[in-house]
Amino acid sequence: MLLPEFDIGDEGFAMDLLPQSHVLAGLGSSAGKHACPDGEADGSGPLRKRLRTLGRAAVDLAVDYAPGWARSALQGQRVADTHGQHQGSGDDAAATVDQLKELMDNSARRIGRVAVIGVHGWFPMRMLQMLAGEPTGRSEKFCEMMRDALTEYLRENHGVVVDAGDISLFPLVGEGRIQDRVELLLSQITDTEGPEPAAAADARGAAGAQAVRAAEALMPPRAERAAELQAADTVFVVTHSQGTAVSALLVERLLELGLLEPARQRVAMLAMAGIGHGPLVHLRDNVVIKYIESAAARELFELMDPSSALSQRFVAALSTALHRGVRVVCVGSWVDEVVPLYSAIVQGVSHPGVLRAVYIDAPHYADDFLTALIVFALRLRNAGIYDHGLLVHVSGVVAGSLWGHWGHSTVYGEPAVYKLAVKWLLFSTAAKPQPAPREHMSYRPLNAAEPLNPFFLPWIMRTLWDDPAVQSSRSLRAELQRLAALFDVWTPETKAGRELRYRLEPVRAGP
Image 1 (tube, rainbow, N blue to C red):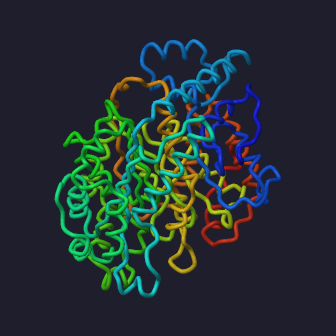
Image 2 (image 1 turned 90 degrees about the horizontal axis):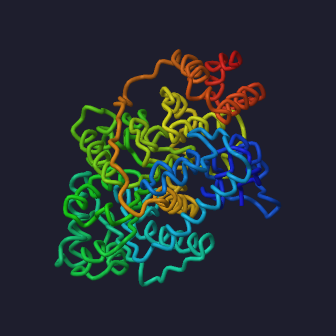
Image 3 (image 1 turned 180 degrees about the horizontal axis):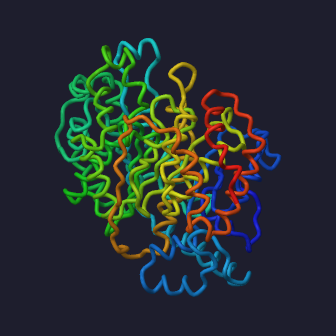
């Protein structure tokens, strides 16, 4: 386990309600300090993967989503404000943590029937697959990993056993442009009669007949699919890359048809390396993408422009889902060679139903200033505090290359990523036996194609130093002090890192 032991009086008292296995939770300022930089966790052996994730204090999350009867009880024993400031005695803290654990256990026990919808991302053309290999991020893989993560987490953390027969898998298969995929994938749920697998494979391009048959074998019979989805009390939509935009529009359609009803179901969407604000800007001029790849690949760059019809449709669909009560987990990936971090976490969107995290593969993990800076920015976003564009300006430093990096793919191979979605859904609905009040999503348009002004970065840091929401939080102030200390000893090896250090020299002048 990666999480350190913590004192109940510390701001991190609620960390045991958030990710445990191979996960660093950023509720307390001590989380990063006690990470195991040498790849060992509590002497138990090499640490293969690391996931950094930040969130608001557990008490306040439960209060935010609780109905009146539970909210008053939790507020009476509140020991942390939104940013983790301790306000109560140790006995009060212990009572609150015990109460929240009980709520989490009850939330887990309410799981009866589960539906898992898998939506794969964009696949390269068949010719490129012959050179680079077959895609591994298939819908069947997402569904099976989500199923395994759910059952393992519930059994190990809550003593809840979900029978395999109570989990229905919907690995949806189909390629093409985003809107075309939405219609094709929706038909695999709603059409009681469909084409034979071979015919369907011809219509889905590189997915191939074998992939289609494998997906069909995991799904319920066609005539029962819509009913199976409606009968589920818990629904996970698991997606990757281009599939994030497809899934948002698909969820919107399922909500319209009444096949998803967050008023009686708990629904979560896990978006891994999603492409919310488009791919890396420089890929737009890549010769393969411009002249060889399909229109579906080139379409993704429309998401860089917030005024494009596709971008507006995606934002509207995501807004509908969040307003209806769907929980969303956005996990970006370190050294992602396709999607920048700000795009994967959908930087322009703000809503308490969204949790953001970054996945760091072990070879690229370092407990240094850059890691701490990005973790700090994610904590701000998850706490509802605007980062003033910090994540946009630093995303390029952790971007990967098409030659030698596979961050875009490694993220969906880590079980802890899927467990994070389970924990967030259970946690955010722990004190919610009835629908919580709806809250609208706020959106800051982000034109990813516009060049960044490097002179903004020191002003962003200065603004964060002086932000009242940051300065009023003991834990966030401590993180800023730690950032200053880490900056003094940070010796980046890459050109982008050295440029970032030069631009951030004003951090030395912080309080």
